[in-house]
Length: 229
Image 1 (cartoon, rainbow, N blue to C red):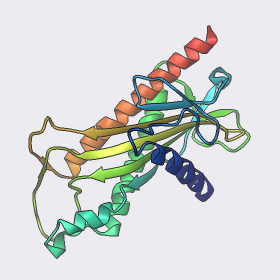
Image 2 (cartoon, one colour; image 1 turned 45 degrees about the horizontal axis):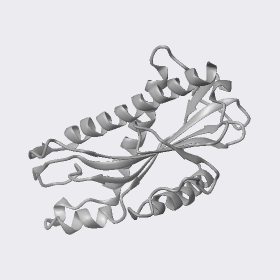
Image 3 (spheres, rainbow, N blue to C red; image 1 turned 135 degrees about the vertical axis):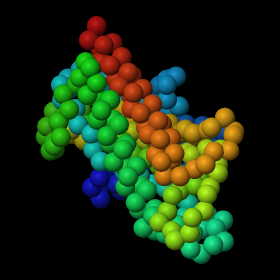
Image 4 (spheres, helix red, strand yellow; image 1 turned 90 degrees about the vertical axis):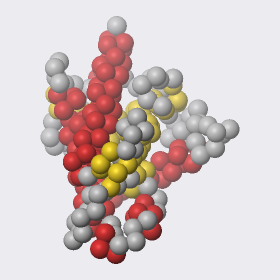
């Protein structure tokens, strides 16, 4: 994601996320950029631009997925690790977020390509009549990340962790956001203790990403069908 897009994402996202920190306050009915909140049973929070016409788009694109760890995640991980050879480095954190970002983009691209497939283009520039999906993962909290360490220590957890999807659908020509989806999910292993490693973490993360991507595709097709009638 470009630096200017990251700045816009963080500023808008901060306003929305701060709006839901208190139960009494709840999510705003209208966002600072004019999107209206609608009821949806598949995602916790959905905003749509009034009178957005999704049927005008015949091509689709998916941007790189920006991934942000939960605030102080690195510090909190290392506070619990007494063995200095088992500390999580910034390099470990960057590797984890980069891998998750790649899987995130792949999941949404694959969902759009499932039959009946939408036309997904690899490259698109400002000015193209393309409906662009801009997926982001925020507040990523991996309970037991696998790190490059000289010591072999087993980790057991009841959950891979949690993360929040912050997905925007925008017009490729105007960059106007038409739909915004925010959904927080936690992966749970029915409260039993499981051995956590890089493989199990990836399986759990992929399962959450695929579920989000498939639900997005179903909701998108439903909206397209409704507008064509």
